[in-house]
Amino acid sequence: MYSWNEDTTSWYGEKKYEYGEKGAGKREKSARRAASHGPRTYEKKSRPNEKIIDPHKSIKSTSKNPLIIAVDVTGSMSSWPYEIFDRLPLLYNTLSQYREDLEISFVAIGDAAVDTWPLQVTDFANGFDLEQLLGSLYGEGGGGDAPESYGLFAHWVNTHVEIPNAEEPPFLIVFGDIHMHEKVSKKFVHQYLGDRVQTDVDSFKAWEKVTQNWNTWFLRRPTGRRGDQVDQQWAKAIGEKKIFHIEDEQRAVDYAMGLVARAWGEFSDFQSNMLARQDQKKVDKLSKPIEMICPRCGGPIPVKAEGMFTCSFCGITLKI
Image (tube, rainbow, N blue to C red; front, side, top):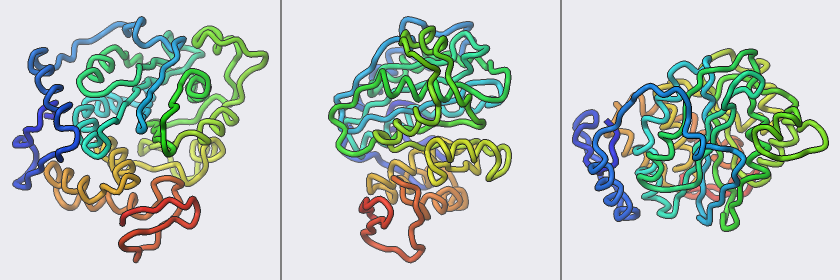
C-alpha cells in the first residue's frame, strides 16, 4: 500500500492528499528507482547483511535534521517491527516534505546475552537508499530473559554516531515493550561494538548522555500497565514524560510522525495526510495525546493554547 511514488489514490476514503513541493525531486527519484527494482519482496531471511548492519562502524550525518528509528525485534514484539518497517516510504515521504535534508538511520535491537545479532544499525540515508538499507536488517525474534540490550544501543549512539550540524536536538525514537539490562557487560561492548572499556557500562548513565544530544522518546507497545517496572525503568533512563504509550499499535508509525510533525510546526498537514488514510475517529484518537504534550520535553500543554505556544518547561515555541 505504501509506495515511494506520490499516488495516494489507493488510500482510505474520499479525502485526497498531495505532498508539498519540498522534497518533490527526491520523491520522484525514489519512485523511479522503486519502479525499476520492482515490487517489494518479503522473503524469509536467515541472517542480516552483516557488512551493512555491523555496529562496529561509526556513522555520521551532516544533515541539520538526522533521525534515528530503533525497533526492538525480539520475540515479544510479535509482528510489530514488520508493521513499522513496512511503512518506511510513508514515514520518509511525509517528513521529508517538511525538512528536505532529513536523513534516517534504522536500528534493530535484541539481547546481547542470547542473540547472535543483538544490535544492527544502518548508515544515515535518504530516499530509496533507505529501502535497501532497511532490507539488510534481520528480525531475529530472539530474546530470552525479559530485559533487552537497550543500554548497548545507547552506548553505541554515544560513541559511534556523529551529528555535527544538527541545529536542534534531533529525534531518536525507540519502539519497544520491555525494560533493559541495567548493566552492559564490557565483554559485550567489545564483542559487538569493538570498543574497549574498563568497566561495565551503566545503561542509565548511557541513556542520560543520549538525552543531552537527542530528543529521545520511548514509544511503548500496548502491553503491561502504566507505572509498572518497564515505565519506572525507562523513566529513570530518559525521563517519565518521554515515555509515550501507544494505544493503537497499527498506528505506531503515525505516532512517531505526529510527534516529529508537531515539533516542526506541521501537525495540521500531518493530520490531513492521515485523514486521507484513516477515518476521523482514528485521527482524533491519535492526535489528542500528541496535542496535550510538548514534543521536545513531554511537558503538558494547556488545552486552550492557540497560535504560537512557548513551553514553560523547555522553552520551545510551537505552532498550535
